[in-house]
Image (cartoon, rainbow, N blue to C red; front, side, top):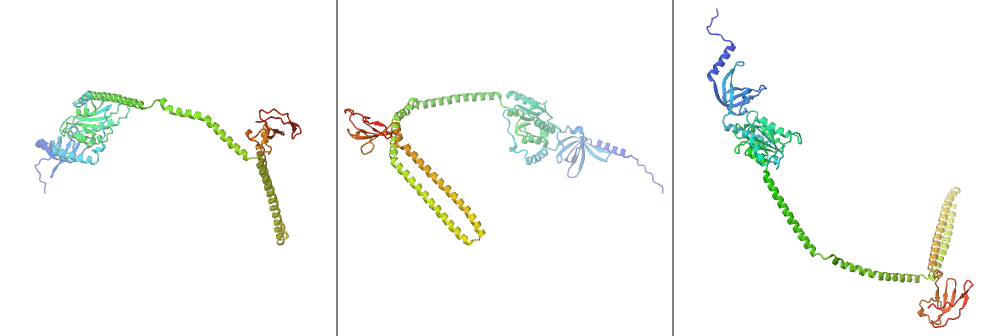
Amino acid sequence: MSETKSNAAEFTVSEISFSIKRTMEDAFGYVRVRGELGRISRPGSGHIYLDLKDDRSVLSGVIWRGVASKLKIQPEQGLEVIATGKITTFPGQSKYQMVIDALEPAGAGALMALLEERKKKLAAEGLFAEERKRSLPPLPRVIGVVTSPTGAVIRDILHRIDDRFPLHVLVWPVRVQGETSGAEVANGIRGFNALPPGGPIPRPDLLIVARGGGSIEDLWGFNEEAVVRAAAESQIPLISAVGHETDWTLIDLAADVRAPTPTGAAEIAVPVKAELMALVDDRSRRLNSGLVRFVTSRRTELRAASAALPAPQDLLALPRQRFDNLANGLGRALIVSTRTHRTHHQNLASRLSPVLLSRLTSKARQDLAAHSERQQRALHVAVTQKRQAFAALAVRLTPARLAQQSALGKERLNGLTDRLERAYLARLGQEKARLDGLQKLLKSLSYKDVLARGYAVVRDAGGQPVRSAATVASGTALSIEFADGSIDAVAMSESAAPKPAKTRKSGTGKPVRTDQGTLF
């Protein structure tokens, strides 16, 4: 059977693919498609590949690199958007897709839902906690500003700072809108924090992140996680001044302080120099005034206290008078004390008479002799007892044992004998030393040593010492003892004529004159 030929035209794969491509592009042109973003892919080429979907279909889409850098919002999965572009095909895979030229949120509600979801996520991590926020320095030396260097915001901040308190301001230039604005702002915050203290570029004491007002899409870069995390991690206190007072972004929650406007941020950052100077002047005046009042009050109190104090001479009058009284009585007290001690010594001397000392010495000698005799008897008794014991043992012991015990007994006996003799001699020496001491004491207290110094002892007829001249009547016979002998004398009144001198022999055999005259 022969093959049947067809009149249908033949196309190559490329021809039919490109024909379909032209047909779709001519039929649809530019379209606006509303849908939810699904899969999103960002390869190294910089293009963005994504899916637009609804509850029944999926449309593939691509955003070329040049368009992606200019998008107002960044594509995120789950975000409802309106994509503007053209429908085309990709012949290499026989698939159709949408080349997106513009991307905008489907409505504020979608962006707000995404914003609320991100806010909850970051709040759960503690990035918005009040306890982690730092207080601002009262007077910073350097302020770092992260903003666009060409906008009106930086001019307003610099002008406001210059009006209030001129100081050093560093600007970190960033784009405040567009795809890369969030990353640039985060890098600016981290860059200021990375500056070393004391380095060639001064490290700021305070940061301000600022931008003018705009729609939620314009401010979306300040809602990105990178910006919020950089603000929360900043070691330098940070003021957020993004948008107007009614605008708010997530960086406002992570910053230490939120300012309503960029100008308000400058007012929060620095005080008014004139007001500070006025405050310092006022407090200086108040301090000086208070110091003057304090010194005046203390001077008045001191004067009142000094007026109530007595004069120095009055304070010293009583002690001086007491000192004079004591000084006057010191001489009399010394005389009385000397007399008292002299009387005490005389009483002691009367008790230590030569007769008493002689009696004590005799008794000590008798005791020493008795002790010596008792020790001799005790020694004899001890020796006898030992001998008797040895004799009794000699009967019971063998000759060898006897010899041994005898030798031991002799050694012990000799030892005891030596100890007894030494004890006897030691005791005898002690008693002798004691006796010699008493003899020396007797000699030192004997009146004969006093006679040797030129004194004499006057005795009456009975041999008793005469202690007072008032007790001796005229014509009383007396005996006067000197160191080298004694003489007899007769007491005479002062009006009686002197009698011829009498002499008698002294104890040395030499004649001694007895006409010494009266001692009274």
